[in-house]
Amino acid sequence: MGRSNDFWDSFREVLWIAKSTVTTFWFWAPIFFMAYVIFQMWLMFFVHPFTLAILPIALGIYGIRNEEKRIKARYRLGQAKRMFGTHGIGANPEPMKKSEWEVERTVEQYENLLKTKKKQGKKK
Image (tube, rainbow, N blue to C red):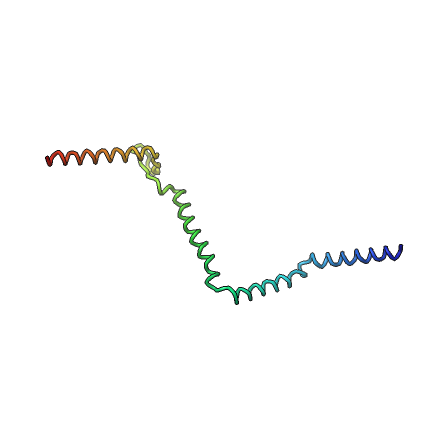
């Protein structure tokens, strides 16, 4: 039994040493560095440099487009705004409701229709 216990004790010691070695930073540092070097060599020989430029350019264009959309949404630049006479000095215009905008457009179309009918009536 003494020999069996000695074997298991030494086996556990080997496992503890292996665990302490594998879980340290300095064990993995050269392995990760070598993987980085191999990856860089692979990029150098097998990937064209312009291919690496595509992703940052695409991200830049996407970011610019989203920034414009965000600014328009934040400051409501796409909406029609109106100032009333009752607004105080320094008051900002209020966005018009969609129904108000449609009513105003319909009234303008009606006024234009009346003008064209007047012109046609005068020509007769």
